[in-house]
Amino acid sequence: DAGVIQSPRHEVTEMGQEVTLRCKPISGHDYLFWYRQTMMRGLELLIYFNNNVPIDDSGMPEDRFSAKMPNASFSTLKIQPSEPRDSAVYFCASSSVGGQYFGPGTRLLVL
Amino acid sequence: AQSVTQPDIHITVSEGASLELRCNYSYGATPYLFWYVQSPGQGLQLLLKYFSGDTLVQGIKGFEAEFKRSQSSFNLRKPSVHWSDAAEYFCAVGAEDNNAGNMLTFGGGTRLMVKP
Image (tube, rainbow over all chains, first blue to last red; front, side):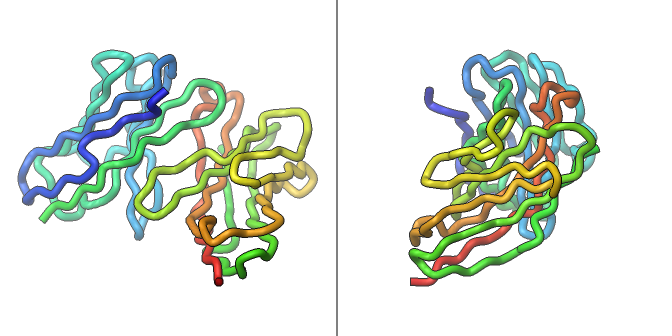
């Protein structure tokens, strides 16, 4: 298996622009998680899905953030409009029973 | 709710020396326990996991961890550290009653530096 795939790996954008991060989970995994990692705040859970349904989005910082999972093999995290404080590494992870498996992350820089 | 504490933010060891990274958890029942490693610029990689059974768990890259219920600990060990082990290490806990253990609570991480 190719593991969790994320795209893009790096994104540089200007404040106010829309940013879309993409994730393809491991086939057969029924949970998908979005995390954000910064030096100041560490690893934060933003939202997670079970069988494509959002279960808990309490970690989403504000309404500028939204996430979807239209099918079992694809999820997006969107930030609109983006702000400099959104600069971070965003990770997607998927799991069945047995632990979460992380993608390589998207490094986002908002200027 | 469960919680995880990694008391050491930074640890420096010499190459070839032994390593022990500490992890303490808080949870009322038997937890699911994990160790992850994150190399610079990379995602988190699962090193090993404990669900039940033998309390000494072997993982990848020569790491092992021991679950000690009496101490609420799950310390990670390696007998001889290599320079390539320099990374950040995260301990995590899940619970059977929390979405089948899929929801994890992560510790703050321990950054390991290896001296030549």
